[in-house]
Amino acid sequence: MENLLNKEAVKRVSEFIKKFDDKLDIIVLDTTARTAENAANSLKCQTGAIVKSLLFKADESFLICLIAGDRRCSLNKLKKILQKKDVSMANADEVKSITGFSIGGVSPVAHISNLNILIDVSLKRFTNVFAAAGHPNCVFKIEYNQLIKITKGSEKEISE
Image (cartoon, rainbow, N blue to C red; front, side, top):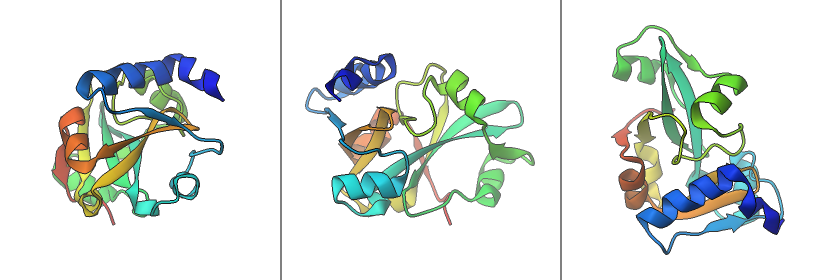
């Protein structure tokens, strides 16, 4: 499993988080963190403390929504906030080409495209949260307030 740290996507996340705070580290899990439930079981934490990084397409642009693992992103709330009629989840090819990550390992940081990021306020319940780090078996632990700073994200009520 150690060679996961040598994967390009994981290295990109590691370098990004280290630049922000050299105390942040990638955690390599023995089991997959492909879903929030998987990650919570592996980390022995609440499902809500897992950050889901979801890519959405709004008309012709893309944005990332960071949602607590025990919540769903509300398309209606997103449409109102963005003032767009056509908002949908990106497909797997779009996720890979826009973020540089495959579904299951999409990090909230180190995307290959510059993306606006919305952070659901429900994550505020947790002092520390866990986010994907470029691979389904890799995550990093970060304080909620640091997540806002590292992503330059906007806190919004976007879950249901």
